[in-house]
Amino acid sequence: MHNNQIRSSRRSMLSFFRDIAAVHNLSFTGQEILRALAIGLDGPKRKLVIVEEKNETYDPRVIDLEEVHTCRIKKVYTAIHSSDYKKNRPDDYLKSIALELDLWTQKDPVVVFFYRNEQNSVHEIAELEARVRSWETMLSKILVA
Image (tube, rainbow, N blue to C red; front, side):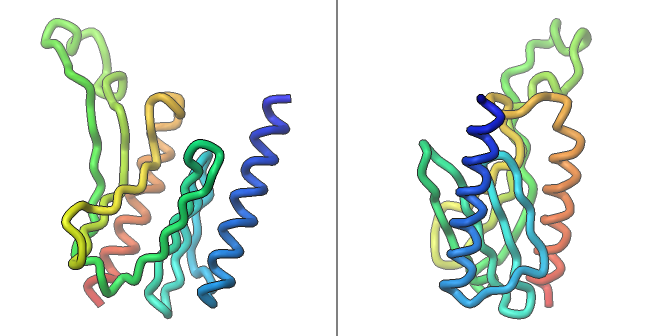
């Protein structure tokens, strides 16, 4: 039953994601679909579409890459006590991995979470970190061009 709900939710999010792209006349040259996130890049038009599922609704965002001045990966850890650090791996303390986009027009960065410890397993960290690094590399190259 739970898997059916996840599949249905994902299909609904993908449909919403495609509708946002169609409304803005965008065609994705790269896209990523995660548990509660869809991100797509229209390279020629220099637009980034982000759809996040929040409380059973979808939060869409279309970002013109001309507005972005930096892109970076941000990792957040919980407090690490020195006595525990030797027993555990750093990944055991990882709270989130996100892609942060600093925009010229707003003070706070746009934060796109790829990993959250309350939603994902620690076993997913390596794969999700590789995915966020790929996006950071791709967007950084576009921002320089």
